[in-house]
Length: 518
Image 1 (cartoon, rainbow, N blue to C red):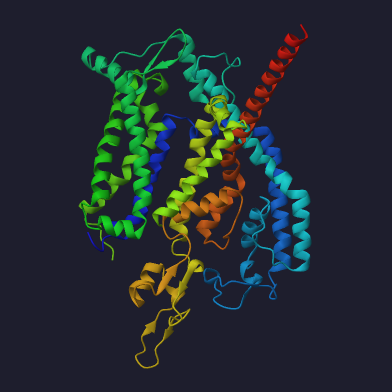
Image 2: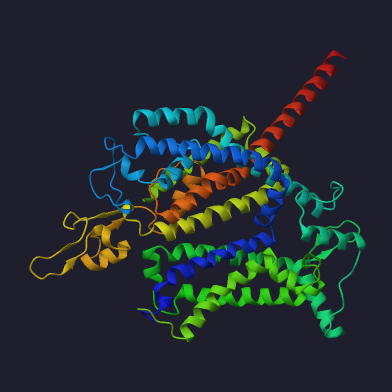
């Protein structure tokens, strides 16, 4: 309904669909292990966290003192901070809270801002040699704890020996689950009779597979595997659809009218997500992972994620029902294929031939941390898009458009300026197409690109809105460390595999030399 509350907030409701990415945690546990990580490393995190926060606060205060009156170092316009022209560093460091954000970025080791005054540069020097290493310790502890939890959880699932007392970081759920496993207590009978009891057992086996009592390994039927692959594919396609919807050209090609391709795909997806949620609730009485309780399933991480995957769609429909209103050419392509000749070096150097061994050696950690990295990337990218798509700091307008609005002397009408609009779309709607341009965070793919750069520890953009600043600080404190785990795991495994290969070559050479001597 045009003009309705739902229509005005439709973009944000669509972004909520990205929560479906968390459903993948059901197949590859990652996000749900975070609480275990913090319990495992609690004591060390308290000590190192206190030191890190103390240094952050102190250096933020020093930077603020030296920069809040710095009117000599020029910067680009920052209209979101109230400066449209002739801006200086004092416009960035208007308050102590502003200083906290920039200091947080510097403590990750990146310096996108270098136009400081003399004493501020001295402060940055001491940050580099003393604080950056200390502040990175909590992030490293979280990363190490996460890898440790993933490895022990993986051993548990494979039926391998784990430390007495269970996995590190267990909470009430893991303790109760271990008690049920050790006692061999089976699922309680259904209160609705044998027929329903049989249906619940069949559905649970279809969804969760069957656990071998001797080895503890899960086995899945062909139907179950096909369903799991289908649901995982559907989740990925949903995320892709959300990204594509944010690209204006694609959105216009598909059509903005109700019933377009994206809407139809969403309706079909909701049917399957709702069905899966209902089936999991129905069969929870037979699921050991749900502690044989629908309530436990519904209130644990997986159940909440399943609910949030469908709830926004139903919420949107309810709002509508109740009428809530408020007002490259071919040759170039073939040339690029020549780059694959680089792989011919494989005949002379050990590289890709060993990659399969590398992935096998670290597949358990890679699956969990890889999913974690994707969730952080996509989730933070969505938040950056929501908070920054209307940030006037990333907006450029035609020279004929004033920076700020003014009142016409003749008509008395207020003429808005480039930075007065809440979004670039509104600016173009008022002045005409292509008169205003958003240079950053234009759509979700654009936001994902910038987020990927940020997660690499490089901050090419720093003048965010306050919503973007909170996302920025989250990435600085913990996001970058978690995102880097898959890469670190690959490096460790690759080094180990190459080392084993070299040892094998040395043994073969010794055997050959021994044969020659004989």
